[in-house]
Length: 514
Ligand code: FAD
Ligand code: DLZ
Ligand code: SF4
Image 1: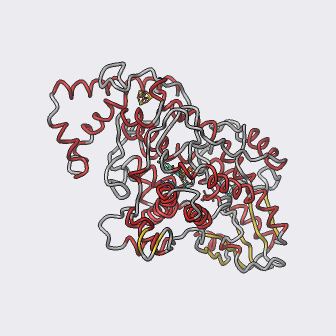
Image 2: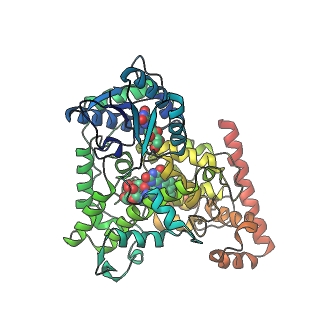
Image 3: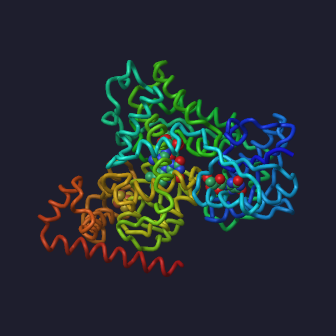
């Protein structure tokens, strides 16, 4: 036999490097649903169902295109439960002369693959992942000798290098960034287009039953299930975003409304990350919408920045900084993850809403992840490992290469400033301005201290006071530390007392509920 070509669950793309030069008559393509990947962290039920269904559909497409596919279902009686042991079994079954796999999305998987040559006494070829516009090698070159690895400069290079939204060598419209026109608070009466709901077929139905039976104790709601699970459906979701949502994407990028999880976001990350969509085609469609007059520059530039800027940049940071990045804890945060993250009752309406939607949809948009959930974890000083695990579990788009830099770097400042120049800490004012959550909250966003005050208000100052040693020399925090130095002792004591009271009750609830 020829080669054994392994396709991992997040590599569902016909142009994936592991399929290049495949001899369809001779090589075997291996895909396997394995318990180890679904449980090394206990992924959200909807995330597992999404991936298994997308894997099964992709395997059918490969078979239709005359590939020889060995697809192992989770409940196949011989399934050994891990990728490595399934590769071993396939080697025994097919007797290949080598194994070919595309570079994985997580360091632990790469480590595993690096041992296979020795373990199986067989050549193992790891090919780079061509789905990204910037290879890990190119990112290392970009990062070399730079004092600061700021996204904005990486993004400008990407725009130039890939000629995206450029005009005669200059950025379209004369500016690189149009955020001054973006990020409006939500206004009442927004007429949001309905979210795309893909039709469910028998393959997905069977997977839902399997997940309900085998992973019933995992977090999250399995149904209703509306994700796209094929490339054709994902392309339709892309088209609907470009036609219906992109227009207002920039304006309302940071806005949050109770009961409106989808807002004007694209909801494409899960398809991009598992291979059903390619970032180049998404960027090209958005750019075209601008040139056709279908969407304004502030929206299109803002959207494209997320994809060729942030998405590529966080992947570069992950592979540049692993494995030590996984242990970063610059602020020495130690608190256990509060149980409210798993849906236990809280009086804080913003947290309640974002966690409820996360549980229902395996989705929350960026500002919910960053400024509500992440901000709370930062201010409460939650252990980065536990916060990382939570984000990896609950979102359908989460793989370590993208999740970890966002959590460790952007949200928790646990890398000491590799990714962000300062922590994104904020009081209740920000959430009150950008959402309507505070209207339905037991706390008052305008009160600064006391049992009725929004906890974010005193936790914000308490966080800065607590971490003064580490943060006060940060030039971007000089104004806030100047205002702390002007605070009376009575004011500081009130802040600290409120925070202590809050943490005591949080820890007590945690103990009672564990
Ligand atoms: P849109 O708002 O429509 O944005 C368009 C696309 O840009 C997204 O689909 C995504 O591919 C990309 N993008 C936007 N922001 C980022 C970013 N900061 N990093 C990488 N790509 C970005 N994104 C993931 O794909 N997987 C994760 O596990 C993940 N974890 C996150 C954890 C935290 C704490 C934070 C603050 C952000 C995280 N993000 C993650 C980034 C971002 O929140 C999601 O990509 C976005 O919410 C997905 O929804 P969307 O497709 O509607 O995005
Ligand atoms: C996330 C995931 C899950 C839940 N299940 C599988 C699986 O059964 N088989 C598989 O090949 N991949 C799965 N994955 C994706 C892998 O965990 C993924 O390849 C790594 O997280 C690296 O990005
Ligand atoms: Fe959240 Fe504070 Fe507003 Fe309540 S008052 S919803 S806790 S920001």
